[in-house]
Length: 277
Image (cartoon, rainbow, N blue to C red; front, side, top):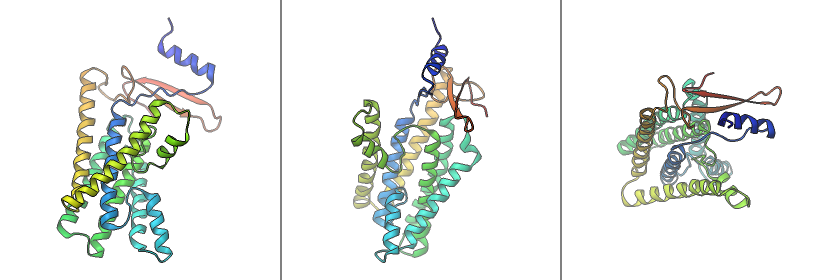
């Protein structure tokens, strides 16, 4: 009987393509929570600050309106700038190349939680009436959401961008032959953002302007605890080696893809325990 690795190699040779074999474990649910967090934060930023800090498509439109004389320029410009700063930091810091996706996401969540808590404290203590406090809030929140977007891109779970749902929404209605599981993922992504924004609006109306920020920080703590719990369970089950981690695969084996840019040929590495390189 051919082993699973042998079957994989045979399929690769027969098709000449690289099939998707990576499993995602609890990551899709965690990314749904991060999408809800994006809705909460954007609800606060749009209702209170009149900019988007996660949805850069909408924010760029607001920026364009400002250049055309129909709104403020400095707010959306600051949001765009600091979103890019956060995304650049998330994309270039050394730890963002961590082999284990759970470790990467957990470390990034700690940083993002700190930014949200800082913004919530500033809003609680100083409000956002003055120009300085308003722009500090925009900068902190936009950097947090740009950071989230960059890290989620590195995690690599399809159909969960967490900060914008244009692609999942368009794919949901435009792709008539999409698999059922992909339609579910896309629907969850859109629904989570709507739910987060609705919850944020309700919290602002029924509680206080800071409530969505505190709720977002609490949600990030749940994400962090979920990641830690999942890692502890996998270690207890013997699925994580002493020096490394499992990247969502079975039996401690993860599949990592690399592509030779010069020849265009795909390469595959199978490993157990931790990723190298």
